[in-house]
Image (tube, rainbow, N blue to C red):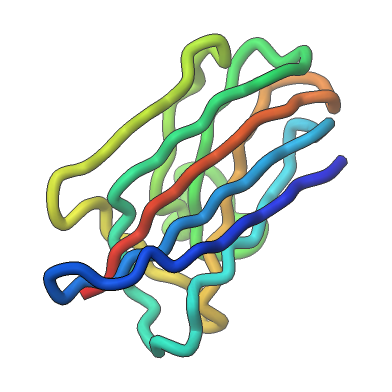
Length: 136
């Protein structure tokens, strides 16, 4: 089970700060949770999710139900779940962008969010995730 997380600040434009998170998964199972550390130096816990992309590149899972939350081990349909997709076939990538200001998200007190791709089977799933956040 492995994951690679890449952070790259996208800078500022028109008074908004951007933050991009890229995650690559290799051989992960159904309950993999990835910790996303937002930039704590900015001192803000409230961000907008502007874009989300996920694609599976290999593995035995047939479906997924990606979720984003603001507590470690958050439960589906709980107050800590900030974004969730219904179960869908992994053969179709998800590529969503939201109009300004995007989906509101707020981190835990340590400026962390938690992402779960929620594959339905196997421990051999591979994929890529891209999330773009903005902050005014």
